[in-house]
Length: 183
Image (tube, rainbow, N blue to C red; front, side):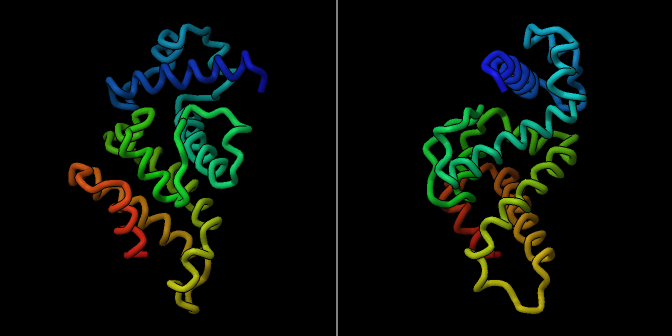
């Protein structure tokens, strides 16, 4: 992706995120996104097929950032998420959630969050696969890997939901400990 395409994509993400801070995902239109981003309709559709694909890409951008930081490739990639990555990928995610980077909390807590949670969980499963050695002593031999990966991802999603529902009073470090203790 060249610099111009990257800047356009970032403008679309920024516009989308700004709109998400004001209204529910289901009520945002592509027209509002292109107006906020100051781009043409064809430009939007050259980057994203639909608003749902934009949401999917926003989620994938977060996980790409996490994977790149995990693989020490952070300096080689440009992301809409910026931070000093801790050693734990799960702590890293909790830190972004606590900072509410790019209004992720609005996506997680909005009425139409099922699509975002589905994308989020799919990416969490990929992350869980990369972290399986960390959990090897906790897995029963009778469990298939696919079940175990789904369990880890589901536990993370439910931990996030609980944390949000309870006002995010715990630090990212504490909630990460909670998560590790129940997996």
